[in-house]
Image 1: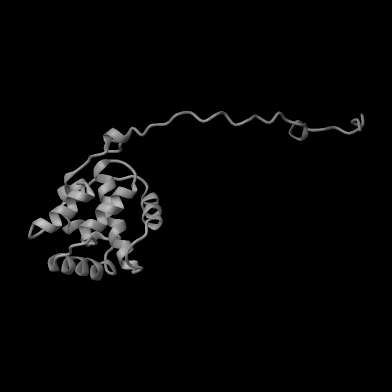
Image 2: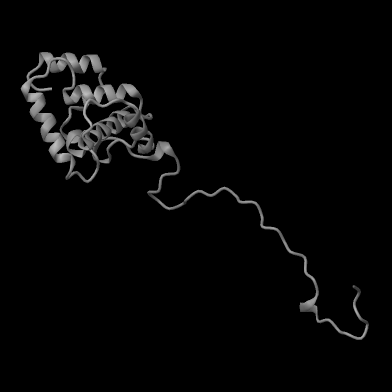
Length: 161
């Protein structure tokens, strides 16, 4: 319908062109101390080792058949798996679960010291702020990043693993 000639329309009532939002531009922080990329993140020492998404580690742990249905064991193994994957700077894989179980002493020959250590880790799992934090702090990182077969061998041939 056209405009009636006897009705005046003010400028603010006239149709206006609607502008589209401009495309987003790249942004980088210019504040000191804020990392600009993965290479800027401090690693090791007091900073620890930052691993990838822990949700993937839980998925790998849940896909693996654990020897015990205890949820505390899931927490301990999950913590060890995340620590091992972070030490390598990659996501969790099934070999990480095997290494964590070997470190917990779930293999053919189990020494009493390993059973005691595993029980202590399971008891502490209920009180840890992060899943398996006690196990991760007490585990030897050099042994944790080793192959599962070598961890089992070390469990049989050394007094303290």
